[in-house]
Image 1 (cartoon, rainbow, N blue to C red):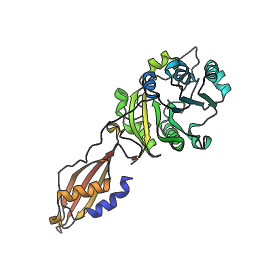
Image 2: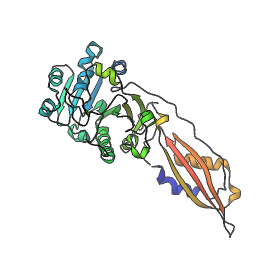
Image 3: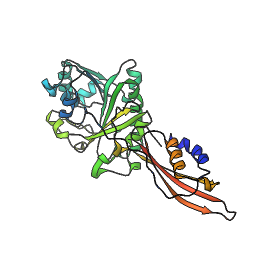
Image 4: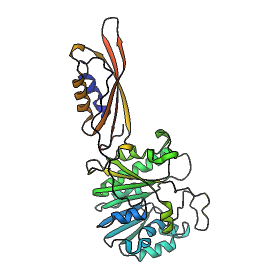
Length: 335
């Protein structure tokens, strides 16, 4: 989005002379609200109102059971949950060991179970329906070294989720630490290019990362949730299942529906270097440069401008290379 304005910026800056000053646009405040996936206590505190939830990619349905049946009287009777699996019911029962969970959930008021649901086809499968919260627990393509495929999975999910998200609703994705590509990954954080780039995949569908929270694996385990991992571990053996104890839950909202909920610490910073000839250097002023950058960047964008190089050519002309660094916690930037 921002890159498309650079040619216009170059034209507007032709009359400006070199400068080494730095300016920043006003900051946007942090915010947040209750999660579904983060912890049972967080969900209970945010569910005291009519709320519709769509759970995608359930394995043995132990999370859906922990969220609903495990909550007991703590769950508001105005909360409805649609829990879905990609696999058919017989696979959930025979391969994933989820028969008891399915049986219990089928008798729970306000809970709907659906099987054979592709999370990247929600818009087509559920045309005409919508949910306040759309959640995907630890999505993954089985196997290691499949970063590009998992990025495609996330991108497909966000693209399909946006049309069935209620106005003002949120999307939540729980990822293993190191996959998302934010500061919330902590010690497991990797170079952004070596992650699933969750914020970028969401931005492609107009969704903005507004908050993150740790996944409280112990609390959910106490409620009966069991991670099956990408090796489809059976109930009697958790060998080779991936670890979710350091998982991170990412919350997204539509651009334009943030309601003051932003996450400055996770806003991605993009860099553009622009080189141009300088004419009419005597017309330069700091105020003009600041106005041009702000106008080009738009409202809600944090911008940093600096001069990288100034070169005087033999014919007396000046060329200038400036660096523009920009980020936004309120716009769905992808580049």
